Length: 196
Image (tube, rainbow, N blue to C red; front, side, top):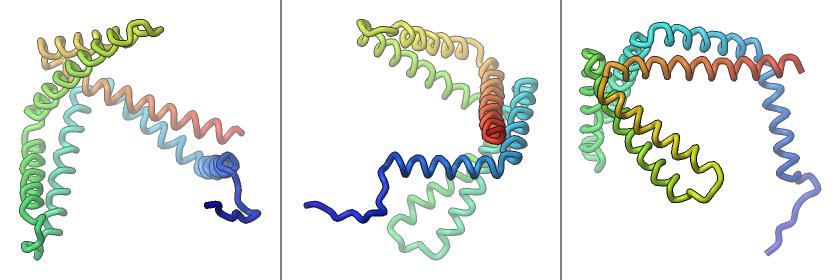
């Protein structure tokens, strides 16, 4: 079944060019804002690198407040909906969000230990899966990089397990590097668009 196309239809590549030009124009128009935002992100990343413990605890506190506030808002939306079929599971979800949020806010050090344990499990599982995957694709070129990545993940999990205090420092370090990379990328994009 064929469809009739009007003479105004454009191809996907032409639409992509139009969209790209519109995005470029929007970034150019707000390039100073993006440069400022990128600079703030880099500054925040540097602070996180200098004070990794503070930045890790800040993330835990932020997560706690987000859970608590979202739980309260969700709880308010449940008022008067007791006869709705999903009421009880939603109420349990609200209670869990509020309780976990309060625990994270009241004791961020314990929450950091929990995050550390989750990181250990994640790095171990990810590392083992990459080692197994690399051995199954061994004839392919560059399979050694996948193997090295898996071994590094397992080693990181073992290091964190042996010394959980390192995880707090590592979490803060990762936050700092992430902020610096994202801020630099955003600033570079805005600078290049502004120059063109």
